[in-house]
Amino acid sequence: MDTPTQRAFLEALQHIGTQVYQSIKQGDARYSDHLNPTADMQLELDIQVDRLIFEYCLGLENVGGVMSEEQEKACYTAHKQGYLIAFDPLDGSSVVGANFLVGSIFGIYAPNPQGFEDKHIGQSMQMGAYILYGAKLELVVATRTQVAHYVYNEAQKVWTHKGDLRLKPQGKSIAPGGSWQHFSPEYREFLDRFFAQGYRLRYSGSMVADAHHLLHKQGGLFCYPATQDAPKGKLRKLFEVYPLAFVLECAGGLALDAQGQRLLEIPLESLHDKSACFLGSKVEMQALKG
Figure 1 (spheres, rainbow, N blue to C red):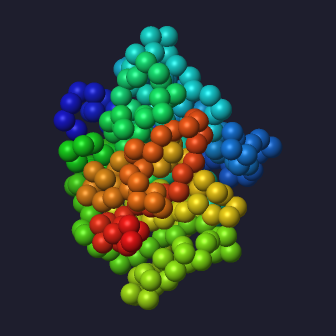
Figure 2 (tube, rainbow, N blue to C red; figure 1 turned 90 degrees about the vertical axis):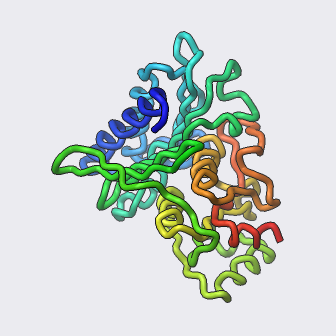
């Protein structure tokens, strides 16, 4: 990381990663009686991890506000002048009980007097990051100059930089989210063209896991369109779409909606606003453009 601020956020994310990893190992994967602001049933673990990350981020120096996917409203510090952190505490939590790969997603936005109400906040992203909780504890942090990949050594209790992630022009797999019965005929044809070319299906039910697989394999496509049962799409711009779009762009890929518009330039209409989302290497994304 190039600047003191970036290094401070890197250290904070590394601390969060180790704490959440232990919480997942010891936590309760049963559903609670609570719904989040978009009416998803919360796990007890969702609530626990959300509280852990929220309180830690709010106490960080240079942070002016924090917003979680699991919370209805943002919370601001007294000075409200620092960076803004939006996060999804446990992406893919519906599959955590099956011991699938899950993660936390973070968007760190520039200080802004409008806070999270700025409709163009996607264009002020300073860092995008995610933490993966699986057989290994991993962290990927993107700035405009690099996409750094770290792995935690549990025996030595240290994080190691494994290198930078970069996409090639074309991959070999696609990860299409959603239910086939709700896809439009045009979208089904779009997917069929990839299968006809020999692309492999690699969808896990965890966006962060599928995005990481794309980066690890240096190419491919992740897509979650607008569907009949989710006309605006299912993924939330502030917590999932903008941060991972930033990561993919910094790695040399493209991040667009179904109309070919850059995701980071699509306005935020509400804190929990949703969008269709297509992330991938350039050849696959060119197919989206037509």
